[in-house]
Length: 174
Image (cartoon, rainbow, N blue to C red; front, side, top):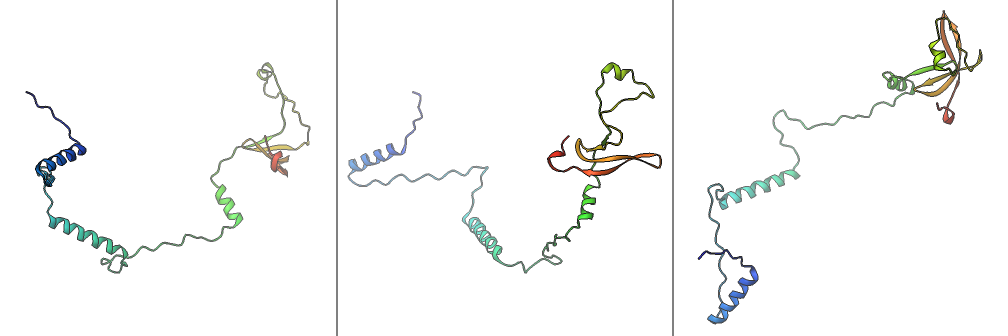
């Protein structure tokens, strides 16, 4: 006959104890829990070890509230530096912040519409008509955004643009 493993829950155990009490006529002591056998992988912990660990934990907790007076030789407490610097000047701060920033600057003299066949016919010396008149201000774009208008000049045989008007707000869009 094969043995079947049966699971007995707490209610059934209590019911069996009551039946045993009634049949014997007196109280029956509940069964004592069996101690776990010590396995080879889990060495037993002695009460002395537990007391020692509790004592060390209490010492560690007590040392948290104590001031750090007893430092090791040569050890110093950490001092935080004051990171508040001098107030920046607007000129130096602006120039320093912009030193490594790359911007795409475009000066537009004018625009025109051409068919592809006309673009392919362009040769050296060809004249391309623009939609602006001579003397009209050139548009100055930074990263595709209109920021100013100015007049084109020749200085020491080089073209240059003198800024005549700064564009701010809503009208400064491409």
